[in-house]
Length: 441
Image 1 (spheres, rainbow, N blue to C red):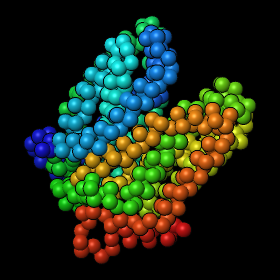
Image 2 (tube, rainbow, N blue to C red):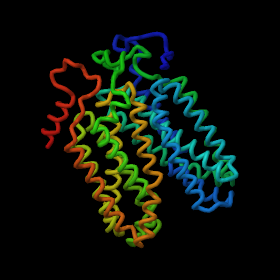
Image 3 (cartoon, one colour):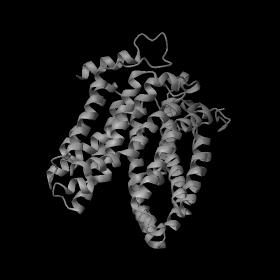
Image 4 (tube, one colour):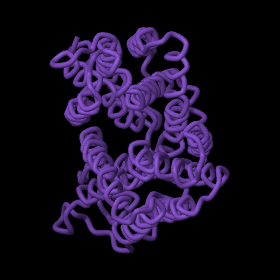
């Protein structure tokens, strides 16, 4: 059952009807991405110390509850993605928003570790996972030729909204003197924004309002009937796992470095303030790289882009072993920030290109599950290595080698023939991409 009851009239926007609704969907998807903030680590970190003081639990206990919640939320994502495909982004976003608000409300009333764990499961599954998944599925169905660029805009601006949320929430906690009240406000905002936005303004696909993918009547066949691989077909395709490996690496190391950045850079002589300030060049480089990568995804195949992304990620990890106060540390922040963000933009654009949009939620649900599961254990593994060796240097060198494995795979694993491609095409999408990559090299 797919939600198609959005608007009964079917008006051709190219023939004097309403303007193309795609830009409005970009705004909606960006807001959806921003509304995932309650489930993101940066936002949750604001509540941790007040929670520890209020509940009288140790940091280890609350970290364990967070790890369990994250893993359980990741396990649920493939099923959530399948439901997004079945019921449509519009209805799914309303339910996701309502569920996230309820999870935040429940977490705000937690009085022991089991309540904390249940709350963490809800906000990680619905926030970091399902809301971001639905946002990318929406744009994947509204855009084709401009898909990568629009997804890049959504990711860059959405990340900006997420980065601002800890500041506002910290002030709310200070204003109320109570983390529970601040979280209740957060729940109300999610419910009052996500649910009406979904039901009133989000539309699943252009055909629901008589429009076309990219606003182009030449793509009428893609607007009316979605096609693509099933999740089973996608996971049996070798290059699918190259894309999974790329986003998994980006998520794993982005979380590891972010979680331990103060201590890691402190080993090389940076003060706490200098180490915290290094998030700024990472954010600037990540935003610029996301926008540029989104633009290039629409014009290139994935091989060169993935290779560059993994090289930057490996180089950033290696540079972290010798980061020093001043330009050296800034250079680390720029390179690492670019590498950690480009892989996500490449995957977001390439997955619907090769595997279609008919089951994009289920297909990307597996990718999101792998990435989020990796982020749940990444900080702990870095802590174990640090305790074992006495510094982060050894684990950083080991880490720097791993993206190079994905780099090699991206260059040698065969590109898949797009599922659902027209059988009579003279030149397949795969051949076009291979030719474009040869020209680039």
